[in-house]
Image (cartoon, rainbow, N blue to C red; front, side, top):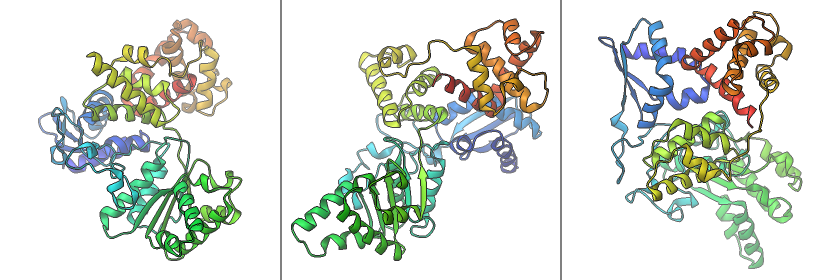
Length: 456
């Protein structure tokens, strides 16, 4: 009964949140008990427990009531069956789940330097500690598919995107997953610069077939930063033949670059066509929600639970790439530890103020209304009209809420900005959105997205 009830609850929640949110937070949960008005829900780790208590509790309670259960209380318990030990950490440690997992590579019993791992892979890069969001969901899904059936489904796979967005992590996670399932698999990971250097040595010292043998006798070839091979004609020719040999023998090829193939001007046309014959995937900067998850999870892995305002400060002000975001977090945690102070928002502002992305000095009513209309693909005149269609009413209410929360305008002024004479409409609309933010995660995401773009 509990299983069927929880599946029904999850089914309703999945319709109201983003795919990334559902996958990250809800997929590895279980309803343990629902008797006597007390509901017990199992979650994978301490951070997930906090998120459910703070963010999702009202929404879960509401959906449970729709399914005939009226809980007096909801208790979130950590699934201890998947817990792993970690020295020098308190008991509320991060535990394993498909998308949020403790990075156990730092344990003295399991850590190995990258060089000692087969094929040049770093064992710390796994799917379990890769944080999924809307910007990398497709890349993650494709990577899992490739790891489960190398050389079959997507071949080649070509990831592209800026520095520090997770391309290397995903590529090596594929290799590590394949080796875990088949330790005899021949997996080779390297940078294109290494390929270039070894090919030059091959020509210079007139080695016989050792170069070709190394790269053509593998089951999986993973090459990072392919853009560095561009413009080098002989190297490109050698890689072209290597590519053909592997592909014709159903061997998996995985490539990354900072640009799509068509945007690398000195890449030969025949290589470009080979790269585009498989799956080409763009990895972008994580959205606000995913950046918050990255900050919170990485902090939790260090045994620290950051306050939400501190998490949002880092996620809002550091948007260039994940490496910079993690670097800022590490700097904050190290500084707080050395000084014996809490890594709160005031500490973050004082320490990281010089690297934060500056916000506009003044946000105007017009900017808020324009941005809200654009988000919902509406005309500004529609938001300010008397129309009562639901697809217009909700954006109008969100605009009123943002005018109040961001500019602290009076209710009469808010009503006036939206073409209303009666300010009680503004009061009602703002109260409705305030309540919806607590219960409806989709509304919360929409408000967060508009707010983030206002300050981008």
